[in-house]
Image (cartoon, rainbow, N blue to C red):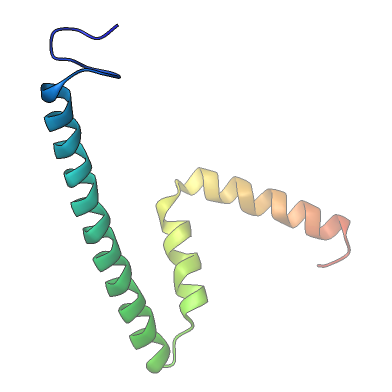
Length: 88
């Protein structure tokens, strides 16, 4: 099924080298991701230490990732549902 590069199962040395490189790249990226995640935790701990609510900060970050129209639509739906439940 594979071509002369030996792609897929049982492809030989070339595929093994390529696979090893891909795995090593993914492992390096996982390490970087862990480092960044730890840095974000540190920022949230600092924010909390300064009296800010990390949960609110994360919510704001989530909102800022969305398009304005998408966020407004979500808020409208949420408001309709909350009204229907007598929450507002």
